Image 1 (cartoon, rainbow, N blue to C red):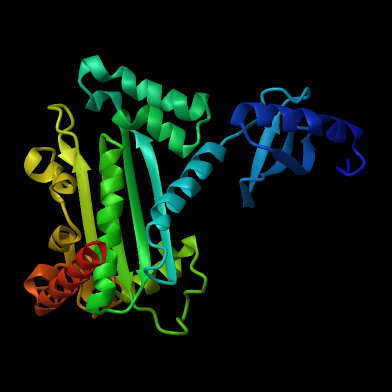
Image 2 (image 1 turned 45 degrees about the horizontal axis):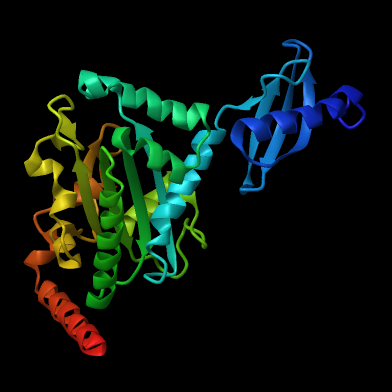
Length: 323
């Protein structure tokens, strides 16, 4: 049965598009389809205008009813979340890429009177098929948002200050949305002009496999900021106890210079580990290298004073311009 001559497939296409448009509030188009005789189902490959680079598989019955895309909402939310984080870094560097997303907190991590918020958040995403901005607006109290961004940038006081300023702005945005919790991880890397595995423009592959290994190798600094809601039920905030001392890092940041407390320089050499098969091996894992004795917090280095001087000079210039 060839899909291009299968009248049933062609007849189902408008039904599939209508069902998906109504379910997900998007404009879909069917690329191709086929019939599975064993399961007596039709499957279709579809695309949507909002994500032209993505294709999704739809499985439906003989009438075209119950059509759904199993990973569509998760994919759309991840793309919208990454774009949100990346929007703050325009102008800081030419090459950067983020992965990000929100999840509903487990009802078991909420006080009994608030557990319904978790179900509401899940229904808003999966039942109402809300876009990220609407999901945040309706469900922030039960959402945890996390994002990691890798930025290809040289190690200079001016560049570091640019990063501190935009991380401050991003943190301020997250605070304004009153999430149950959030986390921001920034990794600064200095890639060679022609890396061995990494390709430009950067893709999501830099967070996995060979490209991920290579970007780790050239990472020279990190920033990690989180904020949580101590509620007496959820015990942890990231890898720390969920108590104000650790949970309110984001709230403690009042200026870009406060972000410097969480900026750490990573030595540009590998850690060592023992392999049962190959003996001693190099490891470019960032968390291992961050434990080196010569890894340093920005505020403990001479460069911090240079950054403060630039920051204060810029602020004074702005005050004079507005004076």
